[in-house]
Each structure stands twice: as structure tokens, then as C-alpha cells.
Length: 180
Picture 1 (cartoon, helix red, strand yellow):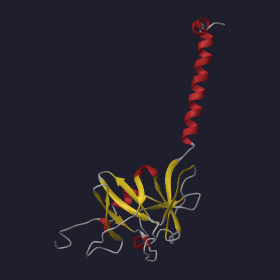
Picture 2: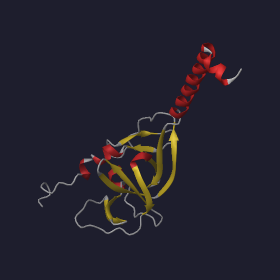
Picture 3: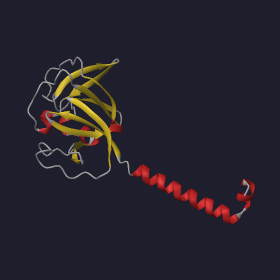
Picture 4: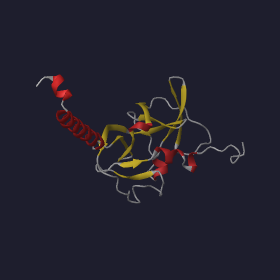
């Protein structure tokens, strides 16, 4: 059968249309099965992950300029191609023992809405996709009951929610409350 005859035949057209719909549905299912991309990193001997879409870039920590009179989780400022990024160490917020970042530490530049912060990681492991849902994090994994710990993925990485992290009251700078 010639292509023109095939396209003019209503029965053949119906069969081809049904096959196209079935193939399109299979592709949608296959893409949905991949799950959300996450960036996994080490911090204080534990595995953590963030949605990869929230991580704008990853780079070596480099020089961090300390700031006076800031909480212990604020390491200071890092110059990233002319932009000053606040570098945070999540250890104190997660209830982990304080440690100096290792020489191989990485800076995860996380962006939510119009805000950026740099999260310090001991090392970056991978970007991967997870099919399964998160299970609630045990209280020990959630630190001091922080709201931005979403759960634990199948690889036992503690998944953090960057939007809730950016809303963390301890991170909000309020010059009036500080008497400045």
C-alpha cells in the first residue's frame, strides 16, 4: 500500500492515530517514572539532598570573608564572579557538631525566587532521580525539628526544601529587631 493510499484510508488512519496515541502515552509514563532530579551531598558525615532545579551552581568554597556579629551558621561572604554570596554552614541548624569545612568543601549556590545563598557541603556526590516518595525523616535526622527537612529518600539522603529553608526565621535579617 502506498503512503497516499494509507493516509486516504479512514481505517488505516484510525489505526495509525491509535498507535501514535499509545506511543505518546508510553513516553509520558517513561518521563514521569524518572522522578525529580536531586543533588546529593555530604555534610558532617550524613547525606543530604536538594532539588537540583534550586541549585544554580556548584563550585569550590574558596576564600570566605568572615562577618562580625553573625550567628555561627553564617560563615561569611564569598565573591562569585563579582556577586557577594552569603555562605551558610547548616551544621548548627541541623544540630550537628560544629566543624571547620574541609579543604575540599564545595559551595552550593541555591536560588529561590530573587534570593541566593551558598550552602557549604563537605563534598558533592551526584545528581540523580528518585522514583519513590520521601519517607518522613526521623527526629534525629531532622535536627532540632526544622521544618525544611522534607524526608528521607530511598538512598537514605535527608531531603531539604530550599523554599522552607529560605523562610527559616533564623535566616531572616531584621535590622529593626537587631537595633541597627
